[in-house]
Amino acid sequence: MSRPDGLSSGRPLGLAESAALLDPWIGPGAAYRGAVLAVSGGPDSTALMGCAALAGRGVPVIVATVDHGLRPASTAEADGVAGLAARLGLRHRVLAWTGPKPAARLQEVARAARYRLLADLAREAGADLVLTAHTLDDQAETVLMRLCAGSGPAGLAGMAPARALGGLTLGRPFLSVPKARLVATCEARGWPFVRDPSNTDPRFGRARLRRLLPLLAEEGLSADRLVRLAGRLRRDEAALSEAAEAALRDLRRPEPDGEGRLVLDGLGLAALPEAVALRVVVLAVGAVQGAAARGEASHYPARLDRLERTALGEILPALREGKACRRTVAGLLLAAGGGRLTLGPEPPRRPRTPRPE
Image 1 (tube, rainbow, N blue to C red):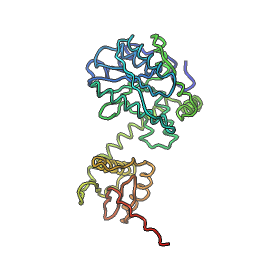
Image 2: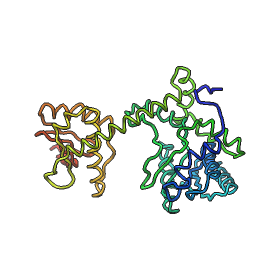
Image 3: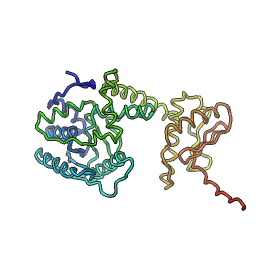
Image 4: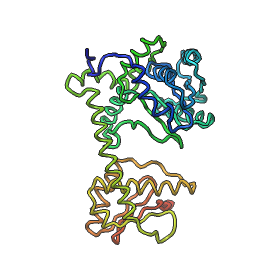
């Protein structure tokens, strides 16, 4: 039996299947010292906690519930997670997000606060891994959201199974599992869970897109196909990134004026395929911004669309034609000329001279 969005209907995870998903992270012989399980009380994270409790003892784990304080029921939900964790024999901590809450971009800011609190707890506990219960459905929604935002291949590659998180690792062991199977697992095991009303709140873009998925699936754009797209783009993006990193090493030239700038062989850069050349510029911008950050200078992240317009539309054509071109991006000056591309901090702007009255 199939669901309207193309996902398989709810079939509980068996012990062997859940162990295969979790063993690389927390099973006997896993490479991590300890793990924090992010558990909100919803069916996905409740299944993560329950399956971890059933798994063979390997890496020590601690369950963490972040109470954002955004809904009256959040404290009771955190208490419910604590009760189930105790029943399963797992340690539990409630992490409170305190302080004023923003009126705009609430979900984005709350997500950043959640990861910060989880990482802080991991360091305190001597753990080096944070596990979340993102599912195949979450991956499909992420890809669709980024498609609507006009993201490039890196964005459409979706969420990675693992990524860095402030010197730790953030892992997503259930990223290939449909949500329906985790709901069925909780129901079959008698693990109580709650449903977050924000998941269906039309004020939030993800919730609005979630309602569209069944309609898109009827036209062939199912969650499974969105996830396959993400996997293909992740594979291609990895190859392009590796090529760009190698090209940056080959094209880098000594900096004549010391630190704070990066010089590239402009003719070699312009001869690269544009997809690789753009990534070389992105990496170079990131390297200069990283050096500036260590020197306590402040820069804001460069937007891909702005870098794309500047690099592909102006800098690379100027290098090919032997013309000079100077453009500022994200607080940096990109200067093409003399067969080179130089990146460095944007010079301070001259104060305007007031007009005589």
